[in-house]
Image 1 (cartoon, rainbow, N blue to C red):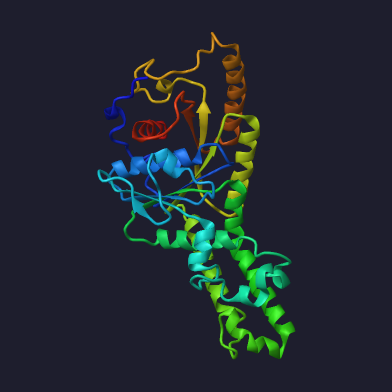
Image 2: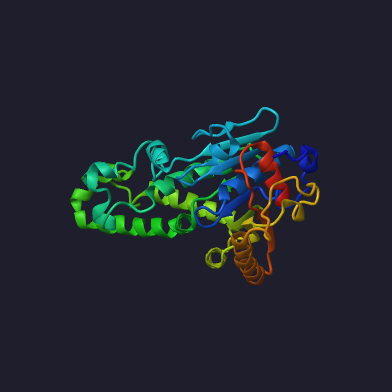
Length: 341
């Protein structure tokens, strides 16, 4: 199959692909193409001359596969011709590197007190979201990194993303529980005070934990700022997926996260109907008249697309076609970027 001429998508005007927001996040259920959209947006932004970092917070990383190059767990320049950087955050490695309470390489000494059981007396089990909190601490560092003018985030699947937004409340709960636990210990608590990251005379239950909660709250504040952040929901043309995207939108509204765009990926229509610069027939597309299966799937997709247009009538609904080839490498990513303009 011939490749599209690069000139057709050489310059991306400010819009969905390049955008003007400092922080662009892609969210949705697993397997809908968030990584592809984030990579295409990051590449379009970099080709526009904007120093862009593409961050993957999804534990099942595939950013390197899409870019066709290794993406390490520290921000690294991926190309020499454009200012494109990438990083895949490993939550477990982040927990070992920075800890969850801001104590480098540890969890503030708590595991020494409680052993392999984690924080069992406090939370009736392992601290939920510890690795995610550590990953968010790294993400905050990247958001404040002056090397980058734009951050594009490929978020973890829906449930993980929402838990991250709930972390400030979770940590405040932990602060209270730690204080109650320490009070039960009585005078023994003073002997173990250092394990909680404080001096025995300190009245604070855990300054490190409160500081981390404040940092996560700062992150949420950035995400809630429509002047800085643009959250884009990715889905596929299936009614169940569209309904789940609507539920995600509802939760994001609860957290006051600004959403501007819904992207329906893998639509069975010719790419030239979405990107007029592409010559007709340049890319293989489904022949609905010759394929009863394709025709039936298109009926299903049309119904889902109509539902998406109804549910998201106040948003910009974009379509990205189902390609015969994998979306990988510069040419295909730039084509997807053109679909997102």
